[in-house]
Image (cartoon, rainbow, N blue to C red):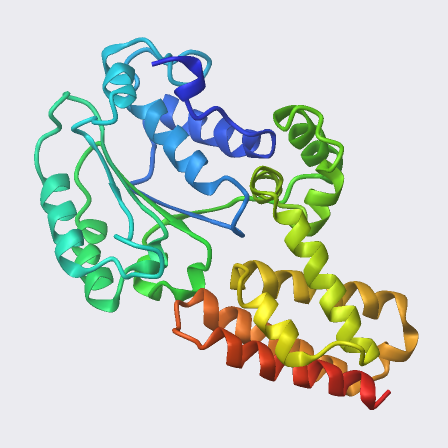
Length: 314
């Protein structure tokens, strides 16, 4: 397993790693962790790194060594004592049979004589039956068994699940720290600062934007919004264009754009319609994140009609 395959701590994960290493060194690792925070903060990378650290047989400065038998198994893509449960497809649920299989696996003896670890991501993808099935493992934890739940929206998890986990909130990094990291990993891409702004300070999402060429999409989106504000753009045409984009990304760009123009324009700050529209955007964003099926063309047409009305009543 080369060092590149080890999930090294990101700069803004340092304190979390230090705290985890301290508990591991004294044998006080909790039986369940709930790692939460916005998308694009490296939560899955953190969960994977912590699992690697426990499964490594010869850690180096609190990080998996990359050469021991445990690390070699991880590098092969199959470690018998690590199970990762994720939805079969984007937007799909994690179902009860998957969780029951996981619980059976965790109840057995470790094949390598060490830790048994399971990662569920995103944990809020479990339907209610699956979440209930997981409770038994949380209520009756086995020795040297760690369950790591990764969640973008932990409020969607049942309280009975959340209360049985030690919570880890992945913080937003300092902008200078995030900018430096992003510049380094992107090969000093001059668009790094812009990508970080568009990603609202989330470094891994900003890197994804750079690699996927998403910044052009975001620029097009803002041009459409300005055209709608000025009345020079058709709502139907704008909806057709935006329907081709990732809906979650576009809604987040919309929220960030509205916030930015309200901060700069005092007349908007006294416009009640702006705050009503803010509420609608946030509600739509939550609905889409929850996996609800929507007609994107129709939804965008309705949003853009309301958006134009905000400015027609100024």
